[in-house]
Amino acid sequence: MARILITEDERLIAEDLKQTLQAFGHEIVAIVSTGEKAVEKAKELNPDIIFMDIKLEGELSGIEAAKEIRGAIKTAIIFCTAYSDDLTLLQLSTLSPEGYIAKPFRESEILNSIKHIANSRKKKITQNYFTHECKSFKLALNTI
Image 1 (cartoon, rainbow, N blue to C red):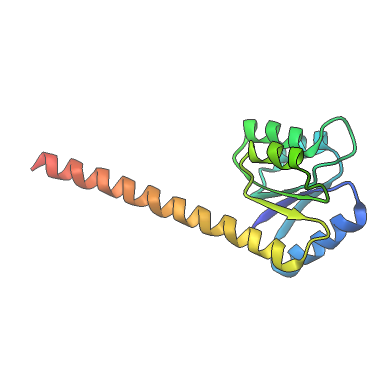
Image 2 (cartoon, rainbow, N blue to C red; image 1 turned 135 degrees about the vertical axis):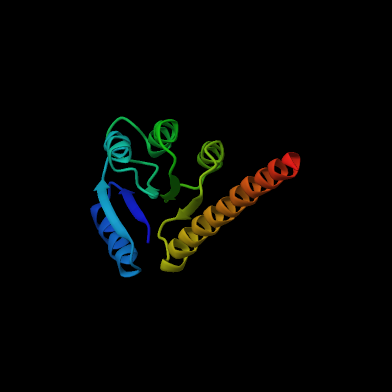
């Protein structure tokens, strides 16, 4: 299952998300409440998925933290927020997040976001495999 970092400044929401994810077998590597801590823990722990709130404690918003994280490591980011105004959605779209869940979120939305990430990764792995195999086959043909 996935190793997940939760970035959420509302403790009750973070704990609820943690329990939901753990109930489905996922490992929660950390819960942080600031963008700065999210960047630090993401680099340190290299989680598979980050659930990221947009409005956080500290200087960095969730969007700013996600930009820094994306510049440092490859990880899936799912934004969880109560804010769905046009400006916020436009800012999110520039990051190409793997998911967006509006608060209050439902368990099914959380699980569907994770399944979407898993399916995207399987597709990418399959494409890479066939690309590699195709190159190998062409090399073998060229040697004949």
